[in-house]
Image (cartoon, rainbow, N blue to C red; front, side, top):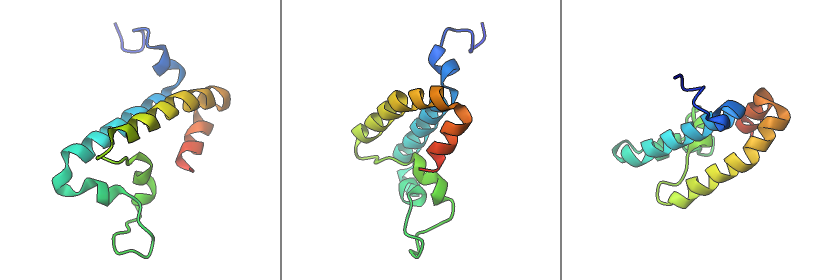
Length: 103
C-alpha cells in the first residue's frame, strides 16, 4: 500500500499546509536538539545592520519558533492548519505558498 492511498485526506487535499507543518516541526526539533550550535539565533531574523544578520534569515525566520514555549509552535501550527487549509483550498497550492512565503 502506498503512502498516498492510505486514506490521509489532509495530506492529499492540502499538500502545502501539510509540508509546511512538517517543515516547521522539523526545524523546531532542530532548535531543541542543536542548542550547542545556537540554531535559533542563527536562523532568526535580525535587523539588516546587525552583525548577526545573514541573508538566509529572510527565509529561515518563517520556520523559527520559541524553543522555550511549546505553546508557541502548537498555536502557530493550529492556525496554519485551520486557516491555511481553507486558504489553500480557496486559492490553490501555488498562490497559498507564495502568500505564506511573503508574510
